[in-house]
Length: 275
Figure 1: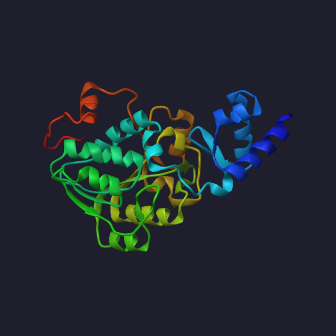
Figure 2 (figure 1 turned 180 degrees about the horizontal axis):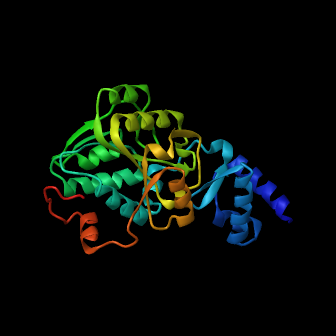
Figure 3 (figure 1 turned 90 degrees about the vertical axis):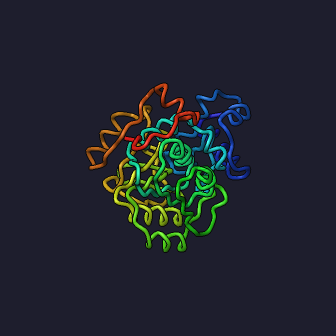
């Protein structure tokens, strides 16, 4: 089968059966996984498919995110490193807005081991549950719940955010490019925008797999928020973001002993620790 014929067949298969992994496609078409990755890269470049972790879906289904549990597992070490870097930007006594997402959930788990007096506003049900026994003050923002991310979003969330002012907001993003930060869901983008506007300073936590991959709805330009990403990010790409006026913070490539202890929840609280 010629490459063009195989790619048409892959697209037909995705349209009829939904998401397929690289491994499945390689087996079905009797070619290597490298060949399938090249096929998917070509289809993605033409706007016909959306790459997912380990596979692809047709572009028309790109609005639907992977399940939250799958997202939590994907690039977990990078997310931990990013959350540790974000922790350095927080001070005792800060009021924080914490967005819904797998990386911000890791940050929530670190907050309860590092601080005594931060106030957290969040639209994330998992983050609220993570913080419920921390002793920290937590306000859960209302709104409609997204099934996949367990995020509260929409007009009610935006309206509630207009009543508050925070020191810092930590947001997730599905895509980052030279035009800014984006997410597949327009209501989610509207909510993230309201979070950014309610905070004195905003940070976007996005691992290297999100870079140079714009999605449907943009919620901020590069200049409006500081990107925190991991050490696997392409330095040349980060340089273009900086040249465009964006601020970029890079997570450490390796974890210290204290970092590992903190991730394990064994580091005692120390007033003022955190940067």
